[in-house]
Length: 289
Ligand SMILES: Nc1ncnc2c1ncn2[C@@H]1O[C@H](COP(=O)(O)OP(=O)(O)OP(=O)(O)O)[C@@H](O)[C@H]1O
Image (cartoon, rainbow, N blue to C red; front, top):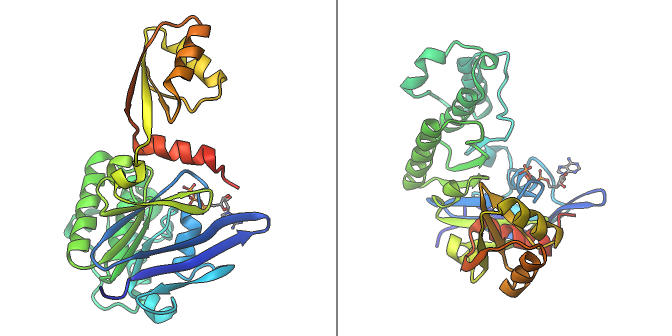
């Protein structure tokens, strides 16, 4: 296999007493979309900032396109940070020119559908439109690696689907993509996932690999509010989605006992856990530092 386009070797980053990233090794190959998932504060952004050479590692090392993330290699990357990194008092076109200068790119261009907003100040665009512009600007110098930190938060369903189409097209053209997301439907569109909990990389591979044999109990009852309250008080990892109650990684007998004691009649069925439930279980085993 060729050299990965991004690689971290045992990287750790501490901020005072907080270990934001703890001994993480990972890589992204050309042409693949790798999803970096984990709860808020898991260390995803800190890992990305180290990979891009924007933040020094306390320990370990990173490589971009086979070497240190110096200015020349960074010019071959496209990066959309969570806060988008646009100048809000410049127009979309001025932001493009600014970015093209920084990347020393010739003929950087935006897709035609941006023609209506070229001369609009970024601050006058909706958050969703700003995100799309930031993404288009990051692609305009035809990067070999794309790093996207929550590219679709605040974006409507159509724009989100379009953005994922573009991500896939980029990967098919050989670009290596690292993308963080909180949306599990998006995680499923990645070729491979990396799961971070409390600064550590605790799972990798497909969704199935990450879920492993974790099971959940689906609790069915008309008295869902009382059932949820009783299970929550019992300190089991209970999740309420609408009126559906789920309890991952817990002995069914314990759930029966809690519900019986609370006088709630319910049917409990063991089911396969979801990826969110697996994340919850891991987060309880290893709380954020
Ligand atoms: N500059 C900083 N100074 C101090 N602590 C920091 C700094 N940057 C991050 N942290 C801490 O490091 C931990 C990891 O934060 P990070 O932003 O990397 O997580 P994340 O997984 O990207 O979260 P989110 O999904 O909310 O963006 C958190 O506890 C955070 O408070």
